[in-house]
Length: 262
Ligand SMILES: *[C@@H]1O[C@H](CO)[C@@H](O)[C@H](O)[C@H]1NC(C)=O
Ligand SMILES: *[C@@H]1O[C@H](CO)[C@@H](O)[C@H](O)[C@H]1NC(C)=O
Image 1: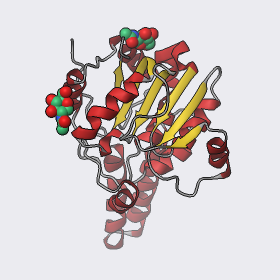
Image 2: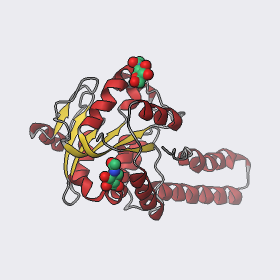
Image 3: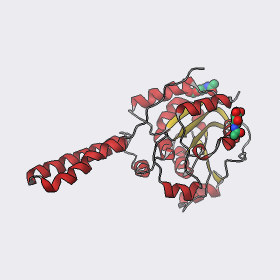
Image 4: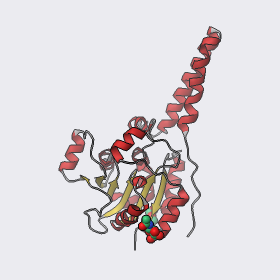
């Protein structure tokens, strides 16, 4: 089985904002004209930064604002939907998403043509809005502890997508949860995981997840998948990367495409 090269972690936010902050500090000591110039340069950088962040796909403001100061792979799933559609085509017709803030992903998926979607929220829903409440009422979204087997039959979904959920499990629980997620999929399992070193909002994280995320490297995950008997789907990887390159999309999370069990 071949390994795919490690995607370098991309931290646009760090590079984009620093020059602007600098120019503000220098302002008091330089001539008025120079400082005006610096502010203009700073403003331009800021505009460029927000533009590059919206990635040119219809300016996904909502996802961007969620990502600031907190790398959420769930908002990354929303940004990746067009690429996932290209990579999986018809296999997007019956999707299960597992991860925090699943209502937002499900709402977005349901807007796609020929897509049915269900969601599992692994932690308590915090202040669900009316759309989310309605999804829960209809049984489309449910709250369930993913440390235990989920109440769906084997091969219930064409595609299972997981974000920000496995990072919080120790290997002991991963050993049960990962095969359980794979069990429900017919065509594939897509995992969005944080890059090691990515900062997450510590306080919010502890209150919501009870423990900080354990962000693992790509090689750790790939070794783990092999141990668990899961194989990466090279076709899906290639199609996803082609679609991403076309749209200059750079995921800020690791994305793994796994084949379902035979
Ligand atoms: C998880 O499963 C792997 C492979 O089956 C095994 O090597 C490892 O010891 C297990 N880890 C725990 C904590 O049970
Ligand atoms: C790999 O992904 C493609 C979609 O890109 C899918 O059609 C195919 O069935 C998958 N293969 C396996 C072995 O899961």
